Amino acid sequence: MTSHLKKLWVASARVEDLEVELDQASEDRNTAIVEAIAAGFPVDQVSAAANLSRAEIATIALASGEDDDQDDEKVALSSADQGSPSL
Image 1 (tube, rainbow, N blue to C red):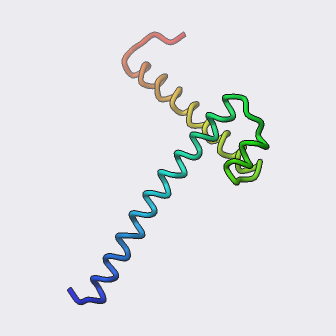
Image 2 (image 1 turned 180 degrees about the vertical axis):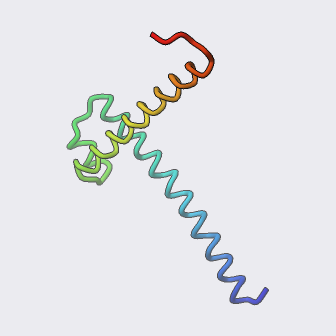
C-alpha cells in the first residue's frame, strides 16, 4: 500500500470513529433532554443547557415519544404473534 493510500485509509477510519462517537453523544444528549423535560424542567432551561432552540427540543421530545409508541407496537405485535388474546 502506498503512503498516500495508507494516509487516506487512516484518515477515513478516524472520520468513521468520530461519526460513531458523535452519534452516541447525540443519543446521550437526547436522552438527557427527555429526562430533564420529564423531571419538570422548563423547556427554556433545557434548551439553554443543551444549546438548542425550543423547536429542536420539541423535535427531540416528539421523536422520543414516537420511539416509545413504536416500542409499544412491537410488544403488541409480538404478543399477537404468540397467540395471546387481544383486549
